[in-house]
Length: 263
Length: 158
Length: 106
Picture (cartoon, each protein chain N blue to C red):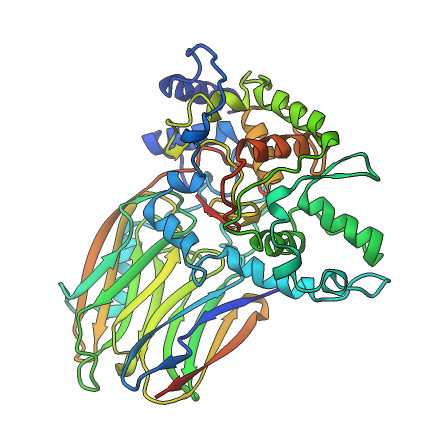
């Protein structure tokens, strides 16, 4: 079954012009960059545009409740330290992942929330991809909606951004294919019925119709890595955060859309 | 699975989609499929065998769906919506999901406008039928054909 | 956690036809899916949605496994007087969720 599926996929890739084409791996010029939003049909765009119909807003609502709820043995809520997220969290998601001095590595927004829980609230970290962490992250990220992505310029981060770029350009897996082969070289084409898109992470956590729920950028990355038939990374792995850093650098200046809706 | 399906273009795409992710156990394996006969039976349960006329009903649904997990759909019915002349209910059916009903909606004369919107799951490209029951006991209907595409990158159930 | 997102205009003129939109959190597990090891994931859906105005039903819907996750519904009603809309979702495994929204009619 898997062998058949691989053959079928390979033929699809050939039809799409992906496999035999010489590898160019050129990054997309700034003027040609497009959000995944622009690849969607009118109905899906409408679902994102209207807060009363965007299912991602349910996560924002739950996230707001969690923001104000005390957790852990310190008896503190997020609001206890950070007050009104609408003020204090504005722009935060636009510059994440950020460098954590104590860990000497970059952390994404989910990891920052969990570090806050363990360091300041004396609470258990929330599980990746479960509703609570997604809701809280979505609520925080929504405060940056409309703001341009402005990656953190901290010098210590730059080697991690470079590693993320290397990972993006590196062919891997049974299909021997790199992220760049689809998302830089073939973003104007389709794979089966779906648009390939440019891998600009403007709207995470996203409400993906295919998932029927909110999901993180790490879930999306793991999804693609499975598609390459490559060895996956665990949630929270530094490699995934490096990829996130690089993708945010690609999308520098593009507005945050969280909670975006995607097919 | 109820029977071995014949390989179709749809099946081919299903396999291809499985390849770029892991095989999506939840979506590509259909345990059962409603049939046009099942849809006809479900419609008879609503109409009691009364004749259904074409007209008055409008069904807005995208002809090409990006993901069958959430398909926006609006049904509207031409009606005065007065105490003596109104739409009592709207029923929407499909012929290829495991189960023929997409939704039943019950209205009151003071609705002002006989229009409902919701989001449905469609397992495959198929014909959708909307039927309205009016206060005079008559039934009106319309149909729409929908093409459902699959996401290229699917994954394991988490 | 469950949340419901209700959209009712805060104000309307008597006789206005208003649109009401309601979105609620629910997985809407169809009962037709299987786990990776082949076991059927049991059905867990919302089966009914009702909207009442000052206690009187104004709209009702039956949901099915074919209703998308996090069900969305929109419908219309004639704004006749100020009052409160109550929303109720009922489903499998004793699921029950309520919400309300008020309107001022001038």
